[in-house]
Image (cartoon, rainbow, N blue to C red; front, side):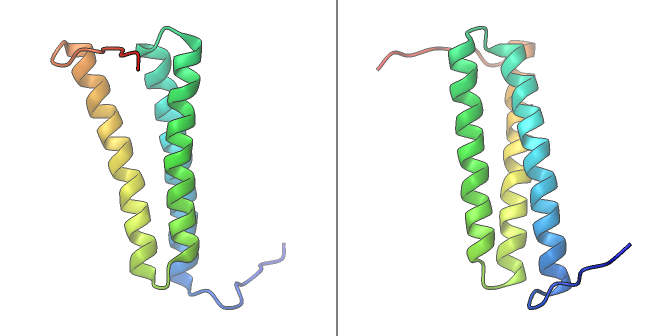
Length: 105
């Protein structure tokens, strides 16, 4: 098996990009589960997933433009925070601590 070493990227940067990709997949999985659990309307669920994907794409873009490893790590922490927040909101809806409301604009 061949191993391709990155040309101009540091090892920490490659690790951060890999972890961002893994966290993004984890966030999409969480969003799909939470959406299926709490959103009955299919169109609303699709819009919810699209919003999550736009957040992920924004973090990917920030990570690509990052000039330091710390900026990449910030993107990783942002995705982890979104995942934690989504799980917490789901728990609050399940326990009745929070309610789910729809608003027409």
